[in-house]
Every structure is written in structure tokens, then in C-alpha cells.
Image (cartoon, rainbow, N blue to C red; front, side, top):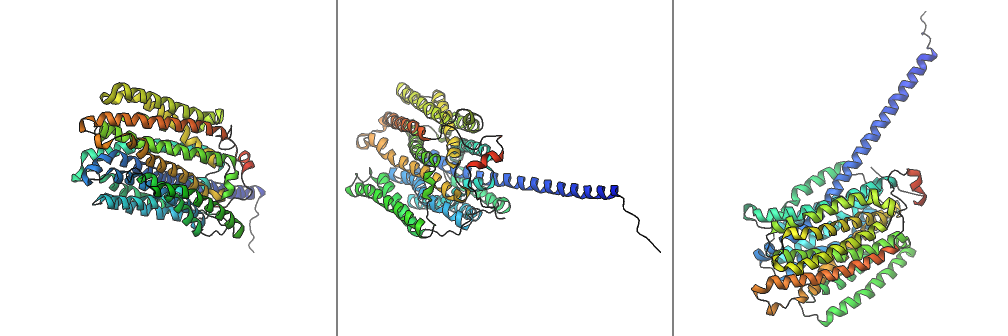
Length: 527
């Protein structure tokens, strides 16, 4: 008769301990894999944001080449830049809400696919009209892609880690700014295969394809927990209001400022008011508005949105007139103009990375205000140098004002995004992200449109002789910078409405400390 050997308590404990150890090891391995996935997902969405930023700056540096090869008018040139910004701005709120409803990963992948295809159409454009139409399509598809970037970050990373992530985002902004002019200058200068400026768009193809493949694999799906519906009436109202405001500004000077343009701009205010009234009605009706108006009751969000709008306007004016000044007014090559901007872009990247993680936890909103004052100092120095040296100015003489401006911008861009999203509930991350990007792009589009007033408006084209082109563009550049100084002064005052100290995103803070201001219910990510 056989018998089972007795199991000693020691061996049982050892076996249980081994199982617990194996389970713990398995759990640690799973957590490590999940952590690795989210950082790869972050790299993918940041690459998409980088691609969008590069696309804007690449176009600026290639404007003279496009103007020459396509025989494009100043009006067409404005539409190649402002048209993208307009389509982008008009679609961002809708894109953000679509991500909340149908899934941010899904909309990101649709957006990056469309952006890649429209980039190909831009690269093969046969005339200014086709290029403008392709840029409008590119802006519309970017509006599906870009709002998902911040929303995916907001839904994927816990509050105590987002400060570091937004610091990286600010550094990417600077890197995009430095890479765009350099890549655009090199591709235009090399004239690959006799394609002139076209490779500046075609370079998006391999980047977009890689982002699509990696995004499908590593991004986790997330959406709002409530069953939302798309507010089509809201989409029509907000898009109409934006078009009524920005289109007359863009074409006004070229058309002689007709009466209908002034009526359109005035009428846009009434359409915006109707949009707000309808959104309030939608909240009462089914709780599914295009814009969550409750977000504006969050002080940090409302104040930050105002700063973002005005800051976008300043940036829109500066970058376009800067490009026109260097390449047309001074007659510099795209490569020389691109290399001139390196100090600015490096300063943005470094200052953005330092500001969120090191400076804002110590000094709060004073960091952003110091950024505005530093940019003003750089602009004033630039105005003085442009007036003193005229058309004989050299790139090295521009380095000091550009460094100051870059540091100032870096102290603003990353902390501002962090401040705006700090108290936003996760379920509204897509809507909030869409609004952030929308107001920035509306500001940029307004700035690009105002170039016709502050820059071209000070140039008398009928009396402009080729020999006086440089002097006229230099004077117009200085006039434009005074406008940017005034806008930054307004931004400095608006920043007093931001919270004095950050409430969230302090590096090293425990997650439990962060959840005190977070909503009680947060949606789980769906995989």
C-alpha cells in the first residue's frame, strides 16, 4: 500500500513564496512592458507634432523659391501659409471632439494618413491654385491628428509625470523650429532631382508612414467615458465664424479693403455669439456640445487660452515677416537664412526643457512673464540692429537678439501648455486639447493675415524700384516688430490672470498629492 509523502510546512511555504515571487516578477515585467509602450507611443505622437511644426517652418523658408517657380503672387503666398493655418484652426475643435467620441488613437491614425497623402499632393502641385488647395487639405487633416497628441498624453500619463512630458513637448517645439528652416534650406538649396522646393513636402512621406505603422502598434486607445455625439450645428457655426473673421483679413489689402470684408469681420462676432448660445442649449439638451463651456470656469484654462491666442498672433506675424526680410529684402539664400535661425531655435529648445521641470515649480507664473519680457528685449535689440546696419547686416549680428527671443519663447511655450491643462478633467482632454491648438492656430492665422497690414501695408509697391527693395523691406520689418512688441506687452499683462503657483505637475510629487484637484471619475484606457 503506497502512501503520499508528507509535505512539510517549510516546503509549502517555499512553494508559495516561489509562486508569489513568480507572480511579482510577472507583474513587474508587465508593468515594464506597459511603461515601455507608453513611452514609445509618446515618441510617435511627438514625432507627429514635430512633423507639423517642421512643415510650417519649412514652407516659410521656401517661400521665395515657390514664388519664383510657380509665379505665385503675394496673395497666393499668404494663402499657402495662412490657408494651412486657417484650415487647421477651423478643424481643430472638431478634431479634438471626434477623438473624444470615436477614440483618440483612431483619429490620430486617420489624421496622420491624410496628412501624409496631402503632403504628397503639395509636393506634386503644378500651379499656385493646386498648392493652395493641397495646403488647405493638409491643414484639415492635421486638425484631426494634432489635437490627439496632447489628449493621448493627458490620458496616458499620470498627473505627476506630465510636467516632464510637457517639458519634452516644449523641447520638441524648439527642435521643430531649428530643423524646419535647416531642412527646408538644405532641400531647397540642393535642388534634388531638379525638384526645387518640392522635397520639403515629400519628406513627410517616410516620416508619416513610419508614424502610422508604429502608432497602430504602440498607442493605446482612449475616449470619453460618456456616449457623446458630434455637434454638427456647432461645427458649422464655429467654422463659419472663423472663416468670416480670417478670410477678409487675409485678402483685404489685395482687394482694396472692400465694405463686405468689414461687414464679414463684424458679423463673425454675432456668429461666435450664436455658437456660444447654441452650445449652452446643447448642454441642456443632450450633454454633448462641440465645446465644453464648463472648461472656461477653470481659471487656469480660461486665462491660459487667452494668452495662447494673443501669443499665436505675435508668432504668426514675426516668422513670416522675418523670412521675407531675410530672403527678399536682404537677398539671402535659403541656407543662409536657415542657419541664421539656429541660435533662436536652440535657445527655445533648451529654455523650454528647463522651464517646466526646474523654474516653474520655484517661481510659478513669473517664469512666463519673464519670458514675455525677454522676448520684448530681443525684439527691441533686433529693431535697433536692423535700423543701424540696414541691408549690410550679417547673420552673426542677429545672434544676440535671436538668442534672447528664443529663451523668452522657451520660457512660455512649455509652461503655458502645462498650466492650461493642469486642472482639466481627463474626460474632456480631447476637447481641451483641440481648443488649445485652435486658439493658437487662430492667433497664428490672424497674425499671418495681419502681415498684409503691418508689413505689406507699409510698402508702396507701385513706387518700389528693385534698387530700393532692401530698404523698403527692412523698414517694413522694423515696423512689424514694433507691433509684435506691443502684442507681447499685452501678453505680459494677461499672464497676471494665470495661477501664481502651479497646482499640479510638480516633479517628484506623489500621485496621491496630485489627485486632490482631479475629477472623482477618470476613464480607464481601453486597449
